[in-house]
Image (cartoon, rainbow, N blue to C red; front, side):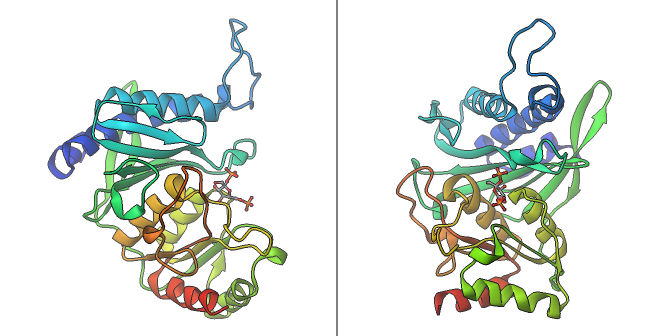
Length: 297
Ligand code: FDP
Protein backbone atom coordinates (compact mmCIF):
# COMPACT_ATOMS: atom_id res chain seq x y z
CA UNK A 1 0.00 0.00 0.00
CA UNK A 2 1.19 3.52 -0.80
CA UNK A 3 1.61 6.14 1.91
CA UNK A 4 -1.03 8.50 0.46
CA UNK A 5 -3.70 5.83 0.54
CA UNK A 6 -2.78 4.72 4.07
CA UNK A 7 -2.91 8.31 5.33
CA UNK A 8 -6.24 8.92 3.65
CA UNK A 9 -7.74 5.90 5.43
CA UNK A 10 -6.01 6.14 8.80
CA UNK A 11 -4.84 9.65 9.70
CA UNK A 12 -6.57 12.79 10.91
CA UNK A 13 -6.55 15.24 7.98
CA UNK A 14 -3.98 17.71 9.34
CA UNK A 15 -1.52 14.98 10.34
CA UNK A 16 -1.98 13.26 6.99
CA UNK A 17 -1.14 16.44 5.07
CA UNK A 18 1.92 17.21 7.18
CA UNK A 19 3.17 13.61 7.00
CA UNK A 20 2.82 13.70 3.20
CA UNK A 21 4.79 16.96 3.06
CA UNK A 22 7.53 15.52 5.32
CA UNK A 23 7.68 12.37 3.16
CA UNK A 24 8.34 14.44 0.03
CA UNK A 25 10.82 16.76 1.76
CA UNK A 26 12.87 13.97 3.33
CA UNK A 27 13.64 12.53 -0.11
CA UNK A 28 15.06 15.92 -1.14
CA UNK A 29 17.04 16.12 2.11
CA UNK A 30 18.52 12.66 1.48
CA UNK A 31 19.29 13.56 -2.15
CA UNK A 32 21.10 16.69 -0.96
CA UNK A 33 23.39 15.03 1.59
CA UNK A 34 26.37 14.51 -0.76
CA UNK A 35 26.32 18.06 -2.11
CA UNK A 36 25.21 20.03 0.93
CA UNK A 37 26.95 18.25 3.78
CA UNK A 38 30.52 19.26 3.13
CA UNK A 39 31.28 15.78 1.70
CA UNK A 40 31.81 17.58 -1.60
CA UNK A 41 32.91 21.17 -2.01
CA UNK A 42 30.78 23.74 -0.20
CA UNK A 43 30.19 25.75 -3.38
CA UNK A 44 27.82 24.64 -6.13
CA UNK A 45 28.69 24.68 -9.85
CA UNK A 46 27.63 28.35 -10.18
CA UNK A 47 29.93 29.33 -7.37
CA UNK A 48 27.17 29.97 -4.79
CA UNK A 49 27.94 28.89 -1.26
CA UNK A 50 25.85 25.92 -0.15
CA UNK A 51 23.93 25.98 3.10
CA UNK A 52 24.96 23.36 5.64
CA UNK A 53 22.78 20.26 5.31
CA UNK A 54 21.16 20.76 8.71
CA UNK A 55 20.11 24.33 7.87
CA UNK A 56 18.91 23.15 4.46
CA UNK A 57 16.87 20.34 6.05
CA UNK A 58 15.45 22.72 8.64
CA UNK A 59 14.33 25.30 6.09
CA UNK A 60 12.86 22.74 3.71
CA UNK A 61 10.89 20.88 6.40
CA UNK A 62 9.67 24.14 8.01
CA UNK A 63 8.52 25.58 4.66
CA UNK A 64 6.89 22.31 3.56
CA UNK A 65 5.00 21.92 6.85
CA UNK A 66 3.86 25.57 6.97
CA UNK A 67 2.71 25.31 3.32
CA UNK A 68 0.17 22.60 4.26
CA UNK A 69 -1.75 25.22 6.27
CA UNK A 70 -2.01 22.76 9.19
CA UNK A 71 0.69 24.08 11.55
CA UNK A 72 0.38 27.04 13.92
CA UNK A 73 4.15 26.96 14.50
CA UNK A 74 7.19 24.87 13.60
CA UNK A 75 10.00 24.96 16.14
CA UNK A 76 13.50 23.54 15.96
CA UNK A 77 16.89 24.22 17.43
CA UNK A 78 18.02 25.65 14.09
CA UNK A 79 15.62 28.63 14.45
CA UNK A 80 15.75 31.33 17.11
CA UNK A 81 11.95 31.76 16.78
CA UNK A 82 9.47 29.15 15.54
CA UNK A 83 8.23 29.55 11.95
CA UNK A 84 4.61 30.70 12.07
CA UNK A 85 1.68 29.14 10.27
CA UNK A 86 -2.10 29.46 10.14
CA UNK A 87 -3.20 25.95 11.21
CA UNK A 88 -4.02 24.40 14.60
CA UNK A 89 -1.06 22.03 15.24
CA UNK A 90 2.30 22.91 16.86
CA UNK A 91 5.22 21.03 15.35
CA UNK A 92 8.57 20.51 17.07
CA UNK A 93 11.31 18.92 14.99
CA UNK A 94 14.92 17.84 14.92
CA UNK A 95 15.47 18.26 11.16
CA UNK A 96 18.75 16.33 11.00
CA UNK A 97 19.51 14.16 13.99
CA UNK A 98 23.07 12.89 14.31
CA UNK A 99 24.68 15.33 11.90
CA UNK A 100 28.12 14.31 13.17
CA UNK A 101 27.44 11.01 11.35
CA UNK A 102 27.42 12.68 7.92
CA UNK A 103 31.15 12.36 7.35
CA UNK A 104 31.31 8.68 8.29
CA UNK A 105 28.15 7.70 6.36
CA UNK A 106 26.50 6.29 9.47
CA UNK A 107 22.71 6.62 9.81
CA UNK A 108 21.03 10.01 10.15
CA UNK A 109 17.46 10.83 11.10
CA UNK A 110 14.74 13.45 11.42
CA UNK A 111 12.20 13.63 14.26
CA UNK A 112 8.80 15.37 14.33
CA UNK A 113 6.35 15.84 17.20
CA UNK A 114 2.81 17.08 16.47
CA UNK A 115 1.36 18.84 19.53
CA UNK A 116 -2.19 20.10 20.18
CA UNK A 117 -0.97 23.01 22.36
CA UNK A 118 1.43 25.91 21.93
CA UNK A 119 5.09 25.06 22.62
CA UNK A 120 6.67 24.48 25.05
CA UNK A 121 4.19 21.91 26.33
CA UNK A 122 4.10 18.43 27.80
CA UNK A 123 4.33 15.24 25.74
CA UNK A 124 0.81 14.45 26.99
CA UNK A 125 -0.33 16.93 24.33
CA UNK A 126 1.21 14.98 21.47
CA UNK A 127 -1.23 14.03 18.71
CA UNK A 128 1.38 12.15 16.73
CA UNK A 129 5.09 11.53 16.24
CA UNK A 130 7.19 10.58 13.26
CA UNK A 131 10.82 9.77 12.59
CA UNK A 132 12.76 9.33 9.37
CA UNK A 133 15.82 7.11 9.08
CA UNK A 134 18.37 7.80 6.36
CA UNK A 135 20.20 4.47 6.49
CA UNK A 136 20.73 1.97 3.73
CA UNK A 137 17.07 2.71 3.00
CA UNK A 138 14.85 5.63 3.98
CA UNK A 139 12.03 4.72 6.32
CA UNK A 140 9.20 6.72 7.86
CA UNK A 141 7.98 5.38 11.19
CA UNK A 142 5.02 7.12 12.77
CA UNK A 143 2.07 7.03 15.10
CA UNK A 144 -1.07 9.11 15.30
CA UNK A 145 -1.96 7.57 18.65
CA UNK A 146 -3.25 4.27 17.26
CA UNK A 147 -0.28 1.98 16.70
CA UNK A 148 3.08 2.46 15.04
CA UNK A 149 3.42 2.06 11.28
CA UNK A 150 6.41 2.03 8.93
CA UNK A 151 6.93 2.85 5.25
CA UNK A 152 10.02 2.53 3.05
CA UNK A 153 11.04 4.71 0.10
CA UNK A 154 11.17 2.87 -3.24
CA UNK A 155 11.94 4.12 -6.71
CA UNK A 156 8.78 4.79 -8.69
CA UNK A 157 9.81 5.89 -12.21
CA UNK A 158 11.75 9.13 -11.93
CA UNK A 159 10.52 9.72 -8.37
CA UNK A 160 10.62 7.93 -5.03
CA UNK A 161 7.43 6.96 -3.22
CA UNK A 162 6.70 5.27 0.10
CA UNK A 163 5.38 1.69 0.37
CA UNK A 164 4.01 0.06 3.51
CA UNK A 165 6.54 -2.06 5.44
CA UNK A 166 4.55 -2.85 8.57
CA UNK A 167 1.55 -1.87 10.66
CA UNK A 168 1.10 -1.96 14.43
CA UNK A 169 4.79 -2.52 15.15
CA UNK A 170 5.55 -3.66 18.69
CA UNK A 171 8.80 -4.11 20.58
CA UNK A 172 9.78 -7.80 20.56
CA UNK A 173 9.18 -9.72 23.80
CA UNK A 174 12.85 -10.69 24.23
CA UNK A 175 15.23 -7.70 24.38
CA UNK A 176 18.41 -8.09 22.33
CA UNK A 177 20.29 -4.75 22.11
CA UNK A 178 21.37 -1.76 24.17
CA UNK A 179 23.04 1.56 23.34
CA UNK A 180 23.94 4.32 25.83
CA UNK A 181 25.37 7.75 24.88
CA UNK A 182 28.04 9.78 26.65
CA UNK A 183 31.21 8.58 28.39
CA UNK A 184 30.86 5.54 30.65
CA UNK A 185 33.10 7.24 33.24
CA UNK A 186 30.57 10.10 33.45
CA UNK A 187 27.41 7.99 33.84
CA UNK A 188 25.80 8.06 37.27
CA UNK A 189 26.57 4.82 39.23
CA UNK A 190 23.11 3.16 38.92
CA UNK A 191 23.34 3.48 35.13
CA UNK A 192 26.83 1.98 35.09
CA UNK A 193 25.73 -0.96 37.29
CA UNK A 194 22.65 -1.58 35.15
CA UNK A 195 24.66 -1.58 31.91
CA UNK A 196 27.20 -3.95 33.48
CA UNK A 197 24.38 -6.45 34.01
CA UNK A 198 23.00 -6.34 30.45
CA UNK A 199 25.50 -8.54 28.61
CA UNK A 200 25.06 -11.26 31.25
CA UNK A 201 21.40 -11.20 30.26
CA UNK A 202 22.18 -11.76 26.58
CA UNK A 203 21.91 -8.16 25.27
CA UNK A 204 24.47 -6.94 22.73
CA UNK A 205 25.81 -3.42 22.48
CA UNK A 206 24.66 -1.56 19.37
CA UNK A 207 25.48 2.15 19.21
CA UNK A 208 25.68 4.17 16.01
CA UNK A 209 25.63 7.69 17.53
CA UNK A 210 22.30 8.86 16.11
CA UNK A 211 19.35 8.79 18.47
CA UNK A 212 17.01 7.82 15.64
CA UNK A 213 19.28 5.04 14.36
CA UNK A 214 19.89 3.67 17.83
CA UNK A 215 16.24 3.82 18.87
CA UNK A 216 15.22 2.25 15.56
CA UNK A 217 17.27 -0.85 16.40
CA UNK A 218 15.62 -1.06 19.80
CA UNK A 219 12.17 -0.93 18.20
CA UNK A 220 13.11 -3.72 15.79
CA UNK A 221 15.06 -5.95 18.16
CA UNK A 222 13.94 -5.02 21.68
CA UNK A 223 16.17 -3.53 24.38
CA UNK A 224 17.04 -0.12 25.69
CA UNK A 225 18.50 3.14 24.39
CA UNK A 226 19.60 5.89 26.75
CA UNK A 227 21.27 9.21 26.85
CA UNK A 228 21.58 9.04 30.62
CA UNK A 229 22.05 11.44 33.48
CA UNK A 230 25.74 12.26 33.67
CA UNK A 231 27.54 13.19 36.89
CA UNK A 232 28.31 16.66 35.54
CA UNK A 233 25.30 16.94 33.25
CA UNK A 234 22.25 15.98 35.32
CA UNK A 235 19.83 17.02 32.57
CA UNK A 236 21.43 14.80 29.93
CA UNK A 237 21.80 15.93 26.33
CA UNK A 238 18.66 15.20 24.33
CA UNK A 239 15.94 17.85 23.90
CA UNK A 240 12.51 16.99 25.32
CA UNK A 241 10.26 18.71 22.76
CA UNK A 242 12.23 17.97 19.61
CA UNK A 243 13.60 14.55 20.43
CA UNK A 244 12.66 12.55 23.50
CA UNK A 245 8.94 13.30 23.96
CA UNK A 246 7.99 12.39 20.35
CA UNK A 247 10.07 9.20 20.53
CA UNK A 248 8.63 8.39 23.98
CA UNK A 249 5.10 8.75 22.59
CA UNK A 250 5.88 6.49 19.65
CA UNK A 251 7.72 4.01 21.89
CA UNK A 252 4.68 3.79 24.19
CA UNK A 253 2.47 3.11 21.18
CA UNK A 254 4.79 0.18 20.38
CA UNK A 255 4.31 -1.24 23.89
CA UNK A 256 7.43 0.31 25.42
CA UNK A 257 8.14 2.77 28.21
CA UNK A 258 10.28 5.93 28.35
CA UNK A 259 11.59 7.60 31.50
CA UNK A 260 13.83 10.47 32.54
CA UNK A 261 14.97 8.23 35.41
CA UNK A 262 12.19 9.30 37.74
CA UNK A 263 8.99 9.64 35.74
CA UNK A 264 7.45 9.05 32.34
CA UNK A 265 9.04 11.43 29.80
CA UNK A 266 5.53 12.30 28.61
CA UNK A 267 4.81 13.87 32.02
CA UNK A 268 7.70 16.36 31.80
CA UNK A 269 6.71 20.03 31.42
CA UNK A 270 9.60 21.70 29.58
CA UNK A 271 9.90 25.38 30.48
CA UNK A 272 11.79 26.27 27.30
CA UNK A 273 11.95 24.96 23.75
CA UNK A 274 15.43 23.52 24.10
CA UNK A 275 15.15 22.01 27.61
CA UNK A 276 16.88 18.65 27.90
CA UNK A 277 16.40 15.66 30.18
CA UNK A 278 18.04 12.29 30.66
CA UNK A 279 16.25 9.72 28.49
CA UNK A 280 15.88 5.96 28.89
CA UNK A 281 13.56 4.27 26.43
CA UNK A 282 12.70 0.91 24.95
CA UNK A 283 11.30 -2.35 26.30
CA UNK A 284 8.98 -1.56 29.21
CA UNK A 285 10.30 -4.06 31.76
CA UNK A 286 13.95 -3.05 31.26
CA UNK A 287 13.24 0.71 31.38
CA UNK A 288 11.05 0.34 34.51
CA UNK A 289 13.84 -1.63 36.18
CA UNK A 290 16.38 1.05 35.29
CA UNK A 291 14.03 3.81 36.45
CA UNK A 292 13.73 2.02 39.81
CA UNK A 293 17.51 1.93 40.19
CA UNK A 294 18.07 5.55 39.10
CA UNK A 295 15.27 6.97 41.25
CA UNK A 296 16.44 5.17 44.37
CA UNK A 297 19.97 6.46 43.76
P1 FDP B 1 24.50 14.67 17.32
O1 FDP B 1 25.16 15.40 18.46
O2 FDP B 1 25.47 14.00 16.38
O3 FDP B 1 23.46 15.48 16.59
O4 FDP B 1 20.84 14.79 19.37
C1 FDP B 1 22.17 14.78 19.40
C2 FDP B 1 22.91 13.46 19.16
O5 FDP B 1 23.66 13.44 17.99
C3 FDP B 1 21.99 12.20 19.11
O6 FDP B 1 21.50 11.90 17.85
C4 FDP B 1 22.89 11.12 19.63
O7 FDP B 1 22.17 10.07 20.24
C5 FDP B 1 23.75 11.83 20.64
O8 FDP B 1 23.75 13.23 20.26
C6 FDP B 1 25.17 11.31 20.64
O9 FDP B 1 25.89 11.92 21.63
P2 FDP B 1 27.36 11.37 22.10
O10 FDP B 1 28.26 11.63 20.93
O11 FDP B 1 27.68 12.20 23.29
O12 FDP B 1 27.22 9.91 22.42
